[in-house]
Image 1: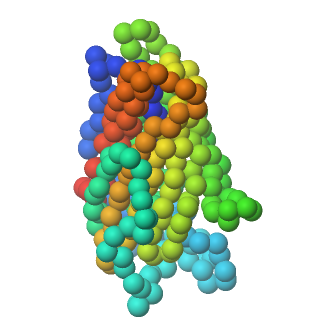
Image 2: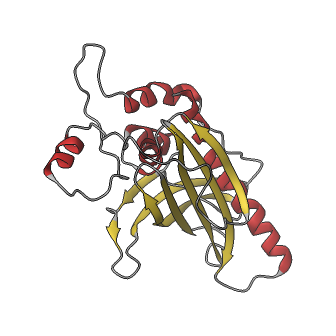
Image 3: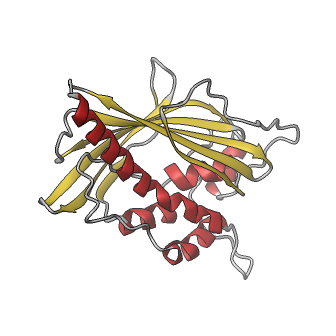
Length: 250
C-alpha cells in the first residue's frame, strides 16, 4: 500500500476513509481460491513466499495455491522485535494467515489497486523485491503521486518509499521497515517518516499487525516547527492507515 505523509496536513480539507462497500467484493475475491462452480480463480502468489527451492513449490505458486504451514509450526505470542518506533499507529488482529496479510498490504492485488484508486494515488510503481548483497535483506522501492488540496492552493506530492524486510520467517512473521520521503510539499526536504510493520502469525489463520512510526530529520529544525511537522505528518499517515480496518470484514 502506498502511503503519503506531509507537514501541511489541512484539517479544513480532511481526508475521508474509503467506504467499506468499495472493498467488500474485492476482498472476497482476493481471499477465495475457487468460484461457486468449483473452478479455480487466478490469484497472485503472495510476495511473502520465500525463494523457490524445488519444482513442487513452483507448481503450487503458479497455480495460486498457498502451501500449508508445517504441522509442528510454532506460533509466536508476540512480535520478535526488541524495540519499536516512537508512535504506535495500529495494533490489530486478523483472521488471516501472515502470508495472506503480507500479500494484502504489500502485494500486487486487486485490494491494493482499489485502495490506491480510492485514495487518488497515481503513477505508482513498485520494483521487485531483491536481495541486498550486504544486508541479505529483501528490499524494494515504491514511488507514487497524489494530488493535494489545501486552503493554500493545489499541488502534487511525489512520494518515494524504501521498504526493507528486516526479518522474516515463513508462516511466522515479517518485520518490514518503510521510510517515506516526499517532495512537492512544504518542509518535505527536512524530514522523512519511518514506519515499521510487524506481522506475526499467532495461531492457524490468525495474525497480529502492529505499525509504529516516528519522524526523522534530514536538516536542523527549530522546536516549534518540529512539533508542527510531527503532528501533521503522523496525522496524514494515520488517515492513510484507516482503511486497514476494512480487512476485518473478510
